Length: 255
Image (cartoon, rainbow, N blue to C red; front, side, top):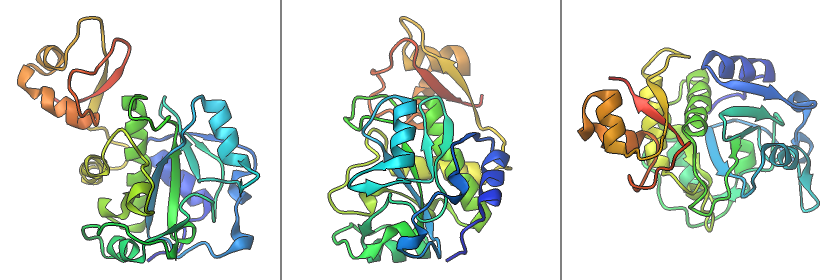
């Protein structure tokens, strides 16, 4: 358990991790604290927006809508990796979830299946909405995945948590599928590796896919070993190594 970071310390930790941040409105004081407590905090929760377009997605997460007032998260992670800060404090992102999952997050152990909704997640989790349609087809650019990794690592470092304190909405609330398109297990693996390095340090480079490229050819030309294509697939959360397209940005492991 931990006391929430101040807004100033929160943005400081994000920037120290190398996160590209954009501030919106009065995000530092934009919250739902009048509806319930904020803290103790126990982890980070990742979502997808089911929207497209940065400006409209950020506006939605800042303002909310008639059935669910904003802020709908603390930060919106755009496809280019920029994290748009829209609120700080209690936010309408997690909703009710499984108390067994919360206990597992606190203990930093394997998560049980979420099968009930009896605990206020808005109190206990930092929340990040990632711009994605959530249809399993909308791509997750390398820059966006890296930003998820960085914001999660930044908060974990600040509180002395491990990667096991980072969960997806689908692991918290029955019936949820977000984030869809990569696995939280693969993301936690990335976060764990980042936590072993110094804040702001990089463990990879990026490559823009060209016409005719395959993961094997990229691994062969950029890493010197085509058989390392599986590392590229894992690093980018690719379930099918044959689905890359020209213009797509991939994160590459160091040689």
